[in-house]
Length: 438
RNA sequence: CGGGGCGUGGCGCAGCCUGGUAGCGCGCUUGUUUUGGGUACAAGAGGCCCCCGGUUCGAGUCCGGGCGCCCCGACCA
Image (cartoon, rainbow, N blue to C red; front, side):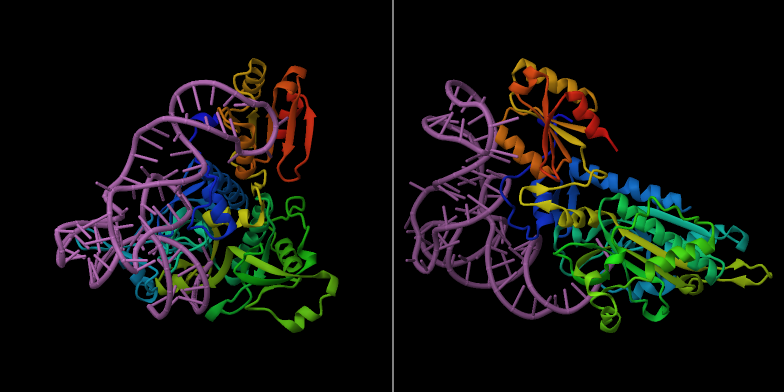
């Protein structure tokens, strides 16, 4: 993308509405614009980040056998009456009437709809297990939206739902998702720690929240340092093998990790002091087993092995995709701006032409840019070097390829790494090689 | 939902108390200048002062009503 032709409105001054770092930076870096309280338009650069996150989420969901579909944003009230939640949900649900006075709602979640769809199709235990997911916009009419996209009313969410014939199989589905989540967050370039969450009336221990560690997080977190540095991408787990899944799950959950709500001082004290980690976290994912709550209330059943009807056991698994954009920035920025993890950055690098109009500079920049016009942002604006540097740091591209007249004459560019601030003078070819190295 | 605050060019703000022809910085346009971390100078463009009603000779300013948005708390993926 050529910056001169782009729709990337960076701001020098901080908009008055933005309080926390991620919100400020998202507005300043031209990722989003607010259109109503808690509702945002995603501008090109922001949308790229959103799509990059989606892609990783999608790949990891598919990898554990979940199938993608797409359910609508609007749902009928009747569907929700079947589970009893239409009246139970409260004012956070946005209720709408169409021209025929039919009652609709803008979906805050999709348990009812997926359960209904599942029931229409699956009739036998032989078709289980099934895991289905979609990535769709949701709406919750928060009393008080704030923190930009981290607590908006409209938000993009990946929600998956599993269906199993019995508890043991449901547990395996849950454990599979736990693995998918650990891999997903690792690939997103952030540390998200799974913490035991409240299971409410269901009971048991099959509910975990995933929290990204950031000083501005809404919850206090306590965890064992043993959970740091584990590489889920390098240690393959056979997700078809219940035994392998169980031992993986036991290993993860054997280490202490809890939010302040569930914090247990006694258990905490047993952890060696040097391994205790305490801080704040932002919830970006939640996995939950809830058994036959919906299959029962909506009367969805399949034929079991012995010919009797059974209500499948369900679990649901959410990832706040749009919220992640804000949360990742909270965890990864400095005074100058955003520091994108390479895996989700809107552009891999920005090419900074320090002297537009100079033949050698222009030619070298064009040559570099031709190596990947979609992955690279070319700052060809007729602006001063300082402004370009400031915008590059603000937008947080992992790499900056700086082309000036001196270097261009010598056939060299300067490559700056945003995260470390490290700069090297190297050939254009080497620079591109580094930028596109995975 | 309790408490507080704010709506004035694209952005950040002043003006309102004490009514009298709307101002500053940034950004934008044109020219000159500068050329490795938001350059300087000059000349410009751009405003239903959130909306409706009232008071007044006259309302951005005073009064009433409405709408929108933000912050603290409670709540929440």
